Structure formats: C-alpha cells, structure tokens
Image (cartoon, rainbow over all chains, first blue to last red):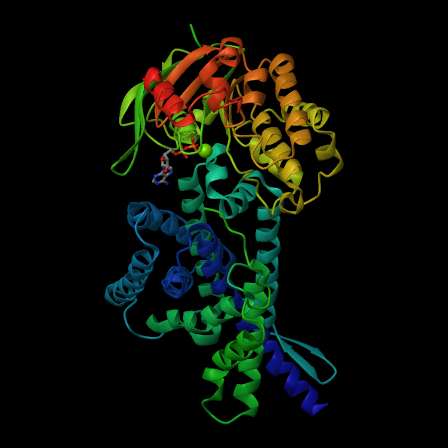
Length: 295
Length: 255
Ligand SMILES: Nc1ncnc2c1ncn2[C@@H]1O[C@H](COP(=O)(O)OP(=O)(O)O)[C@@H](O)[C@H]1O
Ligand SMILES: [Mg+2]
C-alpha cells in the first residue's frame, strides 16, 4: 500500500507536469502546422504568462480564476501583436531565417523580463486555491495542486478540440494547414489564420505559465521547459495535436519516475532517451503520418 | 457590359513574363473557354484574375469594378471562385467540411443548407459520402468535390482550370455535362481553361487560343471547331503535306 501510494503520487505529479509539457508542445505544433515555422520562443511565452499571473495574483491580489482569464487574454493579444509586428514582415523569407528570429525573440523576452521593475531575475511564487489541499481515500493521498493542472488542461484540450472540429474558423485553420493555396481560393485570409494561430499558441503559453508556477515557481529561466516540450512534440509526431499531449504525458511520467527511482541526473535526460528510443522504432513519431502536405 | 473585362494584362514569375498582354471579355451567363497547350499560361491568367498573382500591367474589371491587385479573399467575396487544376481538395477534411469551406465567406445559414442540397443534386455521390475524407476519394470524385466546393460560394463567375486533366473520357463527359447544367440552371458564368479542346469547344460558346502568353485566336466555338489550324494543332486532325513546314507557316499566320 505504501509503495502503491508512492508510485501513484509519482505518476500523478508526472502527469501534471506532462500536461504542461503537452501545452507547450501544442504551441509548437500549432504554429508549425500553420506556418512551418518552429517557434523557439514558445517556452518564453510560458515564462511571460507566469510573470503576468504572478503580478496579477501576487501584487494586484486578483482572484486565481480572474488572473487566469486575464493572463490568457493578455498573452493572446501579445501573440497577435508579435505576429503583426515581427512574423508578418518575414512572410516569404526562408523558414530557417524565421526560426532564427524566434530564437532571437526568446532571448529578447528573457532580457525584457529581467529588466522590468518588480520582475527581474529573482524567483517568485503566488497563492493558488489548490495549495495544501488534498483528497484522501484510505491511504491514498492526492494533491489538488496536481489534480487542478490535470483538470484545467483536460478542459482546455476539450475546448481546443471542439474549436478545430466544429467551428467554421477552426475548420478553416485545419484547411489552411492542409492546402494553403486551396484555402486562398475559398476566400480564407491566410494572414488572419496565421495571426490567430499565434494568438492561440501564446494564450496556451500563458495558461501553461500559470499552471506551472506553483510547481517550479516563477523565474526568468522557466522557458527552458521548451527543452522538454520540444521532444514531447517530436515524440507525438510533430504535426499531431493529440500527439503533442500524449508526448508531453509520456515524458512527464517517465521523468517523474526516473527522478524518484533512478540516480541523480537521469531525470533531465529521460525525455531525450525516450525520444531517441521511440524515433529508432517509429521515425515518424507516435501519431505521425507521412503527410501529403500541399502548399 | 461584359461580366469580366480583361485588358492588356502582363504577369511575371520573377523575371519571366508568362502573360504578355492578354485582353478578353466574358459575357454574363456564358461559358467561355481559353485553349492552350501545357505551359501556355492558362493557369497564370486564372491566378491573375482571382488575385493570387498580381499583374504588372493591365486592368481587370468585374461587374464594372476594377479588381486587379485586390487580395484573393476580397475577390472571392465579390463573386469569383476558382476551381484550381489538379483537384486541390482538403485531404484531411470530410466531403461536407470541404463543401462548407467553399461557403466560408457566407453568413446565410439557410441559403448554405439549400445549396448543399443543390450541390448533392448535381453530384449525388457526394451526398452519399458526406463523412468520407476527401483524400480517400478517387480522382473523379475529388474533381467533383472541388467543383461542388466552388459552387458553395454561389459565385457569379466560376474559373475552371482543366477539369478534364487525368480523368477517363467517360468521367470527363459526365463532368462536362454537369458543368453545362450548372451554367444553364444556376446561371453561373464560366471561364473554362483547357487542353482538351474537343470537350471545351463543344461546351463553350466562345473561345480563345492562347500560345506562349498571347491570345492568337478569338472566335465563336463553332468557328474554332471549323478552323483548319485548330483542327490540326488542337483537335489532332492532320492534313496531307510536309508537316514541319505546315506547322511553321500556320504559326506564322497566327501572329
Ligand atoms: N511558379 C512558377 N515559377 C516560374 N515560372 C512558372 C511558374 N509557374 C508557371 N511558370 C511558367 O509560366 C508559364 C505559364 O505557366 P502556366 O500558367 O502554369 O501554364 P498552363 O496553365 O497553360 O499550363 C510556363 O512557361 C511556366 O513554365
Ligand atoms: Mg495550368
């Protein structure tokens, strides 16, 4: 029972961190599918979301849910703004050049955060309604801190799925990623699709930030989570939205178990070991198909 | 006033001039065809009309309004829909989702519903396969999807790019019969671009022959069908004589 509880706790914490990896991975995949660009600033968008929610909750005393909503909106607008100002002017440039620009963007966001008064290079935390709350059934103890991350992520995935599946604009976004020229002939504005993609990806980053903060606290280098989310996206097939989530979960759980049962150091390379293992067996990733993409 | 008025357009791919001063009219309610061999510039003309490419020179008027240089999504909303060559379906969307993308600019839900039924009337197989992924369909069915998808926009002018390409003669006949019906029943004006001259000339009322980015003939389809040059070079009906010399002389005469 003791052992079972221990494993359960470890897996649960792995799932919850895996959810955050999955959200960041989702950001990578969304932008890649629409624009073929890998946005290396996706982790920094999460970091920025964390700082914004810290300001709202820790400094301005917003209630948690209000802070979540405001963070999503602010980050979404920032994503739109980034696309308008930086990315749009690069349309038509080679993809590698745009990817380099996103790396520059990630540095820019980190130094910006370090220079803003009240943010800087220190580590911060804020209260959530889930702290120190537990569900007990017999000997099993489940922390709300973890459960909340899992539930919020699940709700979010459900929302996103419905958006892409059932709405006119969501379908247009899928259509655009499958065949850009045909989408243009339908009267779909590809520019608006790109812009909306960045909006969604940045908003996802914001949610990831507010979710991750209670676990890792808020600091300038939170964006390095991208180094775990990236293999998660590749694991899932880099092009599959469910794949990104599943990839995130696999890496989160493995990492958590490795951290608990293996010697120091294994935790941080667990993600990459799994990735290499999977890619040897299934080079296209778990959910990847050889896409017949037409541009 | 013609529905579409194209005047002296010149369109480039980088330094390469693909369209070298083309002018023509498309009358309201007509089926008009542009014939030309592979590489003549047919697709480029359609892309220039639909705004995917901008002409360097010249003007395009649609219902009396200049449209050259407008972004493609604006042009679709004005009532011009292009059916691109090569059956460009959204392969991972269902048939119905593909059709609904055709109606993307529209807001009139009831009208869209009615038009879905209208489209299923022309292409019954699509009505039976609404939930199938377009990518899993046969070539002929995909051609039906792209035509039906364009119809869902309720266009005033439909630009059709080589609908016969890669299809069996029987399917080509079937699709052309439907194109003709759409034109008479829905009053959709059609600009049809083809290499398949026999099919296009028997469907359209007026035709242009395009060679290397220039229009070299402009006549009624009946006259074109009777024309010796068209017979030889586009309908494959050869006459006696030294072929190389004839070809050269004929081409010379067109310019
Ligand atoms: N993307 C392109 N880049 C450069 N040249 C092109 C491109 N597309 C077409 N062309 C050239 O433009 C001319 C006309 O092409 P196109 O309009 O596709 O002809 P058609 O549709 O009649 O077969 C051809 O000589 C072709 O080689
Ligand atoms: Mg062509």
